[in-house]
Length: 142
Length: 57
Image (cartoon, rainbow over all chains, first blue to last red; front, side, top):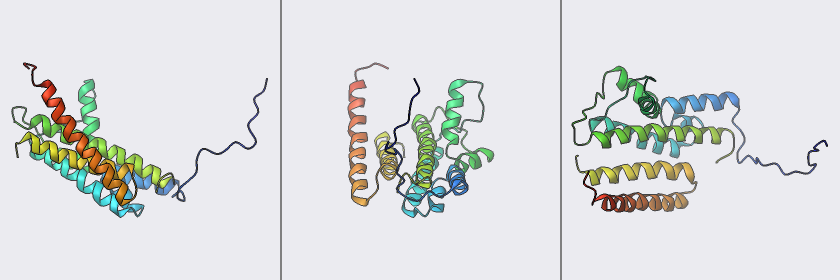
């Protein structure tokens, strides 16, 4: 028996805004992945851009200042790979200090664990922000 | 800055701020969501700390 599509089935996707187009969406997502908040700035969402850049940057810099460790790129160990992926989600905030040799980490420091959590969460929040950029560019959010 | 409670407050403020701006639109809704998240972070952290207090490790 052949399945027939419903004639008057309601569409599940109702764009809130006009979609930004594939190229602009891609550019905004890449910009957001490089610098927190830049994707929102390119889409004209300045309030979000300022808050995301400020919050994520402060969190990341505090993590470095509190003796946190930047995990080097590597996938030999599962948990180290997860740590690296989480931290690298911050984009250039991760890569610039890493290339400059910052963030060696001091496991004996009183704030080492806290600092690492700050750096992980900064990267994970930026991943969430990139998804937000994508939704806005696709017209799913205001 | 080595006080864990201060660091927890800073962490809660920054994380709640980002989540409020991602999840809500409109100043009033964002402020309300931010305050709910902030209070939840702080209260649940303190409660979890007290629940772990008897453990010897």
